Image (cartoon, rainbow, N blue to C red; front, side, top):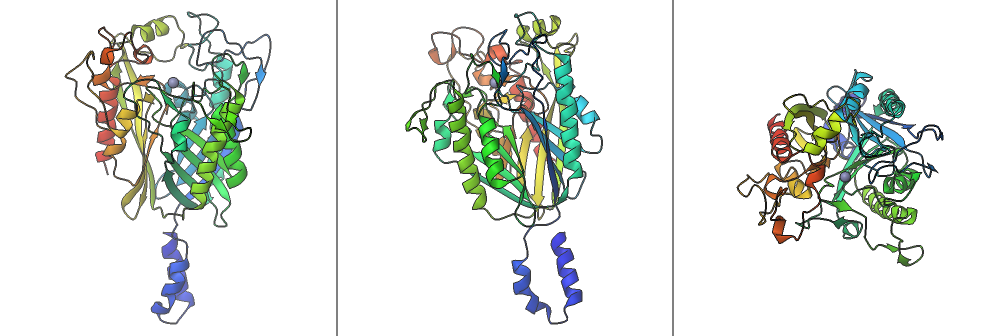
Length: 464
Ligand SMILES: [Zn+2]
């Protein structure tokens, strides 16, 4: 749209034939029509001995003793050809839909998408890691602070919106896989980096949205300092080199994409980065940042004509008795009302950036931790599975048409692992002749999550 404005103005200004303008027009920016702004607020809790902060992600009663790096809510607002869309990333283990709805209520003028980075070194906002197994770790004051500060960041991002250039790119060098270990068959990593960058006309950064799949748990289960984990170093390095705000959104990290146990060479000390350490988190964050910066700086801006977000609410039967018991014990503190039918209502969304009538970027907003074989396609029928005849879910990314495809994990809700129904295994004999139960089902809402969510994505993709 901006390009048309330029050319009509130029037509009025110059009287020589239009053909003479063509070389000039071809040097004009191929972008236009998009406005973008970004903003950041801290969400680090106050350290008060009278109010213990329970750290989420591993066992119970891991009380924070300090802060290694600030936790943030970071938001990117975009508008092009429709209402504004705000994408927020929060340094948190996860936020339930109930809290996301509170954030949305504070930003009524925009469509708001809230993703949790899933850092396992942040306060318990879900209630599962309190002082003992039956006691919630949620501090309502802290969840309210996350809601309030995310609203502030979203509003500030909207206020900062100005004309912007948009760059979309992707890359998958082999180093990315070295930062991840897959804890369950099939060994399959959805480790592509997909990057959306917004910048001003002079190239100064507004925001860099980085989509990559890995558990931010490089610090392991013993650490007691609050940290965003590897997204801390990733954001620090990309923000200092590209400017603007880094919005890290995790991808298909289920089944189980983890840095625990990886052997990564530390380029500074030329040795393997020590396990469960800030140095390991930093090496991963630095490494991913190097790849992001190199890739972005090599990519020319794209055009954009429209940004849209569509969402549907789906109902998933809650068959995991652990989830029902957690709700009954009030671990979620009133959130996740499954009702007498034991059904979870959760949002599934689709963000699209269009260019010249075709999708340039499609991003599925998934309310939990998708197994990579449901992102890329590649579900395997193993002996021992509980539903040997279950239909195979199509890969979310394989259903998309855009050249750039994202799975936005833990977005707008956290329902746990989203496991292919054909790989579901809660009863012996165990999957693929394993000697014991594989890890996964215990943290999943149930075997219907994957079929219901992939069907919802398929329907959203079929809409114009
Ligand atoms: Zn997880």
